[in-house]
Image 1 (tube, helix red, strand yellow):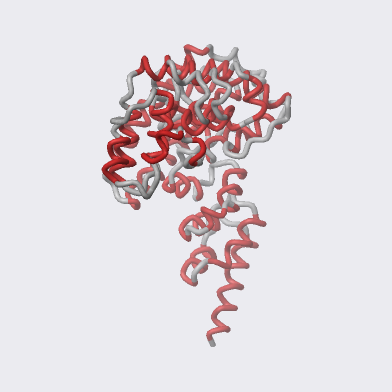
Image 2: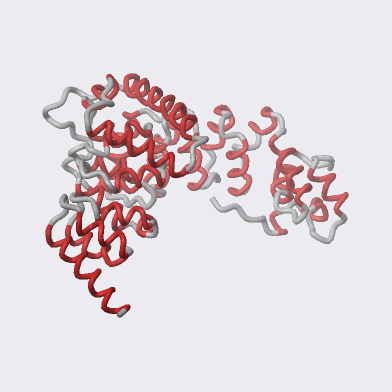
Length: 385
């Protein structure tokens, strides 16, 4: 939710002078510190308004005062008729306070956007409370997206709300693969018939926790490397997967998952998980890996030149406006024999003379691409002549 200042009419009349820009800064600061006589329900509205004060110290003091209010006081307020913006700020400040969130989420005044924000960061018990409110989910599908992206949400709960989205033909704008899941009735929640029963919630949570721990170790290992070094490491890691040198027990467990579990692991898991799942034969799974919000430029660089990946991956990277602005990625795609001819022929004109010459000599490419590179090189030479 994009919070905005309240109108002056929404501020209790006796407190308006404490928030008006024309009031002396010391008066506004006293109010920001909670040093004004006012009942709690009016004080939180006053503090919310002062978080927008033009004086940064006053705005910070108001936020700190609100964050420091006793839980017992707030528990009595968040069920009441506070403005939605105020409830949203309280939700942000106390996003890990389950007792407070339970009451706040039962308040009809709480905005759908607040539900969506909390859905992505709250505890497992709060995700269950959010998921139970189907009226909200249907009215604001971003809440389902938040649950999908929250590692604390049970896999069975995510499956249930995903199926709700499929049955009601909801549209999702933020999570690409979730839109694909709900639009594909055949594979949305089905298991590959060759595989075993899907893992239960506890088993999936154990695997995902392991994956998140591995992710933390991966990030720590890459943190002090240059961009070029990170790309080099990620390329080597991908080559190891191609050569079967990076298999582990967790990959065997991933292989037994349902499609929806693989999709969620590809979205939320570690780099190693994505390197493995980006090669999966199922389109939903490998597209979940490449569209994960955790994907970094170095990952795309490594994948763009990998000839072992599905054509869909190369096509997605090559048609994504963000990635097309990276010259090195374009060079990788043009030199990738897995890239569709229609994609390569549209990108090759962006290559430099030196890189066109390398394309001509790349025997892994289709003759048509080599001829096109030669033709473009000759045309440029004539143009300069």
